[in-house]
Length: 315
Image (cartoon, rainbow, N blue to C red; front, side, top):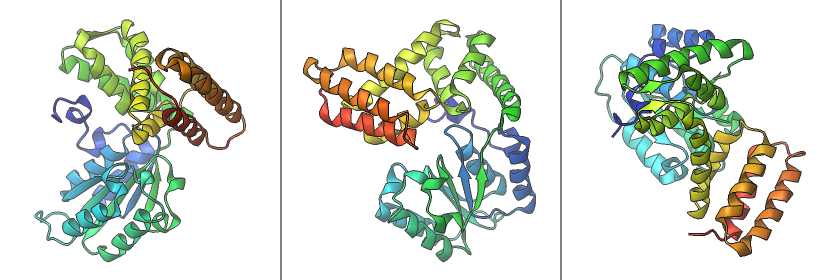
């Protein structure tokens, strides 16, 4: 199944092949030269290569590693405790590496009152045998006790670095499409990168979704937006809160007012008639708040949660 997914099939296995700024690449290359990594907190927006880098470091160092998803199994403290203890307390099967590695993906989704403090204790308990790599979108949602025990690396891309990384990704996409024997319009690829930048993972996933047409041309641009909206409606209907929150994070690159308008246009045709007035009032209220709130993600999630809980959808 993993080979079917382009994002896994073409995931870089070495740091030198990762699309990173020179500063970041030099940082991770230095760890490889030392044949040692500290506990790491990799912070940055979705799809910028944090998990890819974590895995590449482990593979190049020859370290045994496990990945725990903080937005799924990582929310249950008993599951986290059991998996880490079982992994960290056993002897490594590889002779080259100094330590095993536990990768905690999307660590900012983990409970800050129970799971994250437990991880602090695991770092200290298994320090001789294990290193921990945390990835997150928002490092301010990681407790200070974990911050202080990790080397924090920000996956920031400045305006000056944007052109270089986007160009490198364009070349990577061209290589993928040629390998998959999919025709493409280079200008459309550039537009897609601009639309989702710096979320490279999402760009690849969207390209694969529309590759069944046999070519990537201007016709997919409209379809991409339509599919994205349908995805949200399905998530709201099925009351999948975690997926809804991820959708918000992925789409906050747009102006908040634009998202509220898209939401209004979409729900007007997908809600039961009796729920439409309620939804309009909810959207209007949160749209007004968006001009003042400090955190747009929380505001949008609150809006969608209220719609999800109180409105009835057509089936």
